Image (cartoon, rainbow, N blue to C red; front, side, top):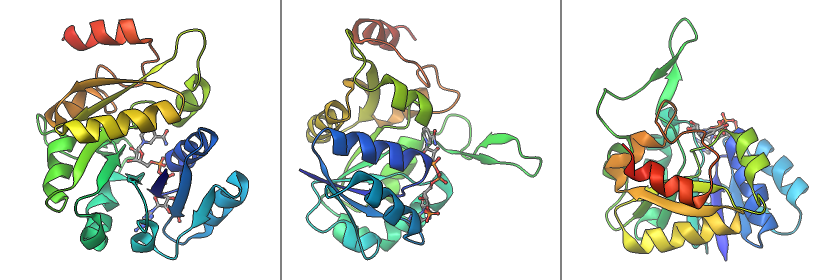
Length: 211
Ligand SMILES: NC(=O)c1ccc[n+]([C@@H]2O[C@H](COP(=O)([O-])OP(=O)(O)OC[C@H]3O[C@@H](n4cnc5c(N)ncnc54)[C@H](OP(=O)(O)O)[C@@H]3O)[C@@H](O)[C@H]2O)c1
């Protein structure tokens, strides 16, 4: 199957390489296309560089928006037409830097990024917040863990999106575990209790129930 990955930076490139290793074909797009081209050259024939963000969605079964939270809405607005009725994965953590360079949360306390992103998407889009729960190095080192696979947590309000994201998570070499609906996304993000945790399925399930 084919996944569009918009954003081929630190996280998008790791997701792309692991999906391609699992047999997914990819359509890549980035701001100036240079990083998408470099990544496609590393991956080989399984990855093609799209002309632009809208073109990346051509024929894609899934769309991963591996973008910083601050540019997410503008890209969603740019691709809103072809995005409607698609399955979308958002790994973005709602964090940025303040004037002193400190990491700050970009949303008010208590507001989940999943609900905010869901409100930006066109009607009919199936959203899963996933693939942003581990920093890129941990994602890289935990994929295809043996003998017990490592878990990638996700949230969604949509059963079909749940099946679709589980397929992608397994393709990337992880075991999927659902935490809840998109209002639960704060648990997955930087500062959340499930962020940067490398655990197997049994521990993951006990953690979900534990808070
Ligand atoms: N890096 C991690 O370890 C990590 C882990 C978990 C979650 N996350 C989350 O993942 C998201 C991406 O993080 P990152 O570290 O990968 O950021 P990054 O390295 O800055 O990469 C961002 C990518 O977005 C692209 N981009 C920016 N504006 C765009 C536009 N208008 N259209 C298309 N592409 C655009 C950039 O293109 P260019 O390459 O052309 O500049 C770049 O490829 C963030 O929200 C972060 O919170 C990151």
